[in-house]
Amino acid sequence: MFEQTVNIERMEQAVGLFGSFDENIRLIENEFSVSVVSRGSELKIVGEAENVTKGVRAINGLLTLINKGESLSDQNVRYVLSLVREGTEDKLQSMISDCICITSKGRPVKPKTLGQTKYIEAIKSNTITLGIGPAGTGKTYLAVAMAVTAFRAKEVNRIILTRPAVEAGEKLGFLPGDLQQKVDPYLRPLYDALFDMLGSESFQRHQEKGGIEVAPLAYMRGRTLDDSFIILDEAQNTTPEQMKMFLTRLGFNSKMIVTGDITQIDLPEGKKSGLIEAVRILKNIDDIATIRFTEKDVVRHRLVQDIIKAYEKHEEERKRR
Image (cartoon, rainbow, N blue to C red):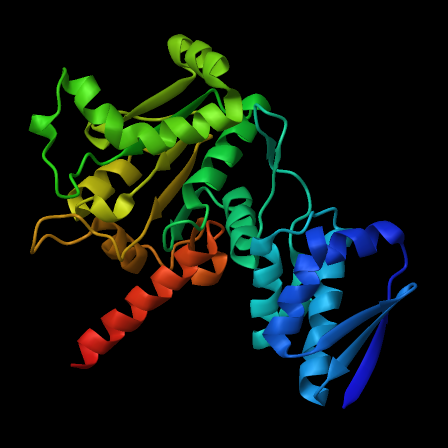
């Protein structure tokens, strides 16, 4: 058996590292088949040499997050373990530790993965950013957080959020109410993110004054959007014509973020996705960035990662057959 020692400098580091009922240490022990023993300010990791090395790297990676002011959760502990398996945990140093935005309930919004950090940096550095990846990677939520930050700092005069009103199996016409009431359910995720950032009262006030607009993509035609932060969500469900129409709405002193998951296209059979085409056409244009998320960037329940992996495996097998 092999053993290594890690020194813990401060008691609060140890408290954060161990977690409630030592749950974080248990995850490390189960993942790498090692035993972790606490002796005063030292942690002794015992097991096979290669596993002990991985266990030490995992503990050091978690300490890096703690030193950045992060509180450890099941999600970010598992994320660090996945980076250790790949041998890339040293990149945790480059993760943004600054808060992007404060929600209406006082909760800081920060990127939780390296993919999310690249996304935030791309939004800051480019006029148009395309964020592509599976559900639960924070594409829309972080985009709204960046929009609210720019709006509060008066860098833009308004926030515009839009989605194509494409049915995922149901028909719009069966929903009760007028046109706005019919499309509101399709825009609900955008409302939810804005409510979280601003609070419902502040959101309503800004919406009434025209500072915030949430509308179907069809409402963008014929407009020039100056001094705006514009987010197109669920862009995989745009046609190439709609995508071109949207991108050419860009005005002066504006930013655009386009988000989508190209594995969940709800367009009619035979219709091309405008998002897939846009990524191909715009890939060599300066000031336009494309960020691709993977299942490792999923920050929802652990099972969401497993579901995405299972579907990807199924799709690969189907293509091979």
